[in-house]
Image (cartoon, rainbow, N blue to C red; front, side, top):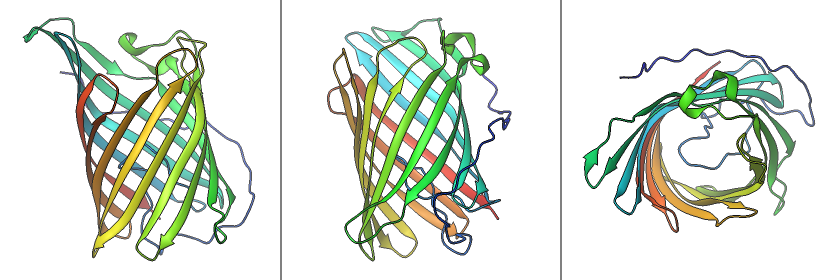
Amino acid sequence: MMKKSIFFAVALLCGASLFAQEQETENPISAERPGAGSGTSVLAKKVFQIETGAQYQEFEFGNVKQKYWTYNTTLLRYGLLDNFEIRLSWDAQEIKTEVSGNEINDVMAGFTPLTAGFKIGIVEEKGILPQMAFIGNLFLPFAAATDFKSENTGGQMLLTFSNTLDAQSGITYNLGAQWSGDSSELSYVYAFSYGRSLVGDLSGFAEVYGTLPEDNQGQNSWDAGLSYLISNDFQVDASAGTGFDTDQNFFVNAGVSYRFN
């Protein structure tokens, strides 16, 4: 069994500030989980936040079934400036394969590439104009296990938008592009999410998202889930989903987010 512990390192230093953001520590935590998309909120200066969880998903190709166990979907965020945060994420994953119902011994396991990046606010919401932020990521293969190591560094550029619909609901949407370390092909990515406060500190969301490679068929999926505020700084969540036109049977995900002021 693979170790479920994870070692963290922070190695990105850069700075920018486009507008002053009100300190958010008195407001409820704003996490980028559950869901595939990313929000527009940026951590206040000197605020540290950890968002982690576990996921199980299945893919099926004819008589071949692959089971993916992700033991930690961990994202670390730190507010370097009032409107600029640095980010690190690193997953530990195990993939088991079955052929005609029989499990084979070739198990892939280990850490996936380390993702290092930043997030910067661009503009606040004003009327029908959305709040906007930019996320930049690098997928670094040096920290990955042999089973998941890519030949080169990959990357992602993502614009995130959000609009408040009313006091109880809002929408978030993403547009961007990414490339892997194993291919020069560019893939366009998108996500659209609707979120709503349900009862008390319980909220729900539904989302569609996908990737559109330049030279291959696109993959589109959906998910939905719930989040619950234990306190202003502590959130738990659960979600599930599947693909519209992919080989994914389903996935389930659960996790926690905690903000250190």
